[in-house]
Image 1 (cartoon, one colour):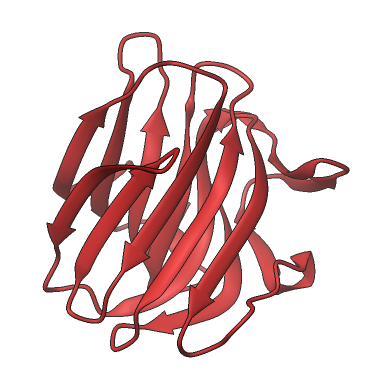
Image 2: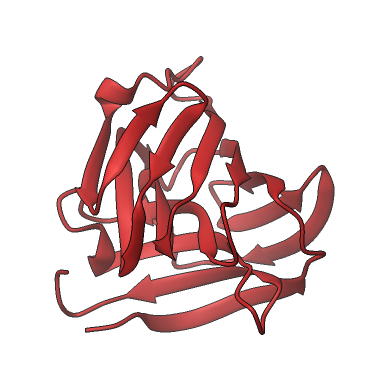
Length: 178
């Protein structure tokens, strides 16, 4: 099965470039705020958000992530040590410059952290996405099942496909494991 976007929470057009710094701020009352390169681009409330694991996702691409950090009043100083990340779907590799997805022929692929943020806690999740080509990549959160991240998740991702240059915040459900 493919993506079933239950709700497109927001879309924001972006200027095409190679590197983006994405910052996601989620509060216990479901307020989701997204910044690109320090600029506020999306602000919305998602009352059904209940928390979950955080991770990374790409779509048919080879992208690199750097400087991934999660801050919460639950667990201070979250470690980005890769022993805490699980490539749930697709190929991921540690490289000197960061963490790379290498999945040009696959649909959505995930690497999910062992860090589970409950819906009662505020957190900030940010990192740099370095694009290799015109593709799709971003940060995911609210992953309900670390072993099957495609089942249900929220995501903020940049789409740099040839026809679309946008940032989207979505809630996704998929009836089939990949």
